[in-house]
Image (cartoon, rainbow, N blue to C red; front, side):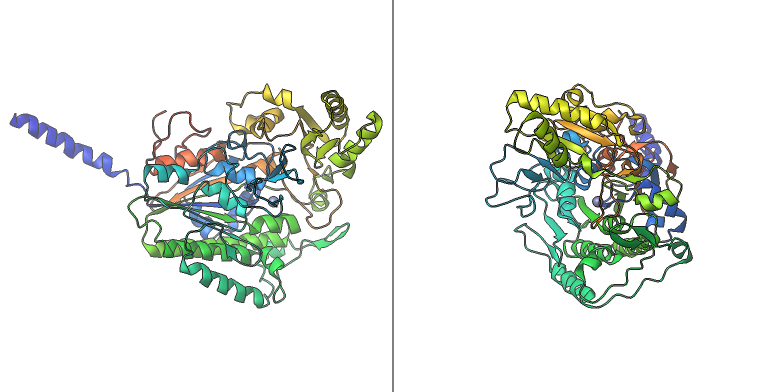
Length: 537
Ligand SMILES: [Zn+2]
């Protein structure tokens, strides 16, 4: 008997070194989504990063991450990150969609609204996570560990809602003037202090940012018809200009300040259970839309973002909390066609405004003798046939519209609802997905259109420029490919070329905090080579 105990003790002793290799799970997950941060931008600027992005890049870098679906907009992109599911499963098919059965005059539905709220429309709405069909990581953490906190702060309300999900403990977003919430929970004291500090920032003028040589080398004014030239801006801002503040790196600095304040006030990572803090950094998207991606403006923005993230991580270090970070983007982006043509992309062009659903609907209506809207939608993406028409007329409109769009030189593909319903969700890596497979991952039978129009590569879906000069939303890799970084103190990772998917982030983080997921319950898979120890598949 004594021999047996000794043997057991020896076995236990021998097991110690192996067990010691696995550190305990972190107490705080910090998940950062940089809006419109394409993998192209990450790769281009990576050698210049010295701050927070350089530190995170010492972890595991998947620079071929994919927002795999076709409709690469903000709301669907954020919905994939902490649910582990593609938009076909999250139900978030776009920033908005059309629901002709809704009992209000405005049939456009915002992704993060409750459209049953009296007097609402898609621009004046009651914020709600109700459209998100699946739970977030924060919700699952709270179900397993009731003491877990699920906290979100973002520039955009939809970013905060889609990452935190149902019943977060705190949810803050920018309303154009200050950080606000719709939750009844008492505001932590730091929010008022952050809002006061940001108000002082906006009230003062902001001097032009000093451009490092790698940014000034990109300063070239590009003419854009109907718009001031872009490319040589430096974020000089006059006192009180809150809109210019939003379209500048100052905005993300404010969001990170709010995140730091929430971390301190709520003592995130210092309770009995792990917490999750989701941060939506929106400035990069606004800079990309207003100035494109390859001028001095984006360079300065990323230079500042890198520095601000460094400061934020230093703050987290100072709390003594054992935290882990995942950083990614909701989608990529493409530069404006005027500069792309100068940079060796001769087929870069703006969409023909004649492709707009309203124009096409009008001409089909005239041809078929139909009145009403006939066709609803934008210039590409989901298109809806007017439900007030008879079923026979709807079939004629669908047939005419699909034939019209398929004949257009700027259109890559048109897929009908029937075709998408017959397409299985692909099992291959997202770099191999065909166009219809990308569109399938964006398809929800209740919310998607009767058909979807996908423009050719390098066709920007902005015809006449009014405000935005550049955008995203296409099924092409400049909009789909995003960086995915995992970092934890004491962990050194590698740069991985293998393609992965943003739906892999949630199961990876779940493994990191030892939160079991039911097999097959999410689209994504735990990623090896990260700080997480993936469960055996
Ligand atoms: Zn955007």
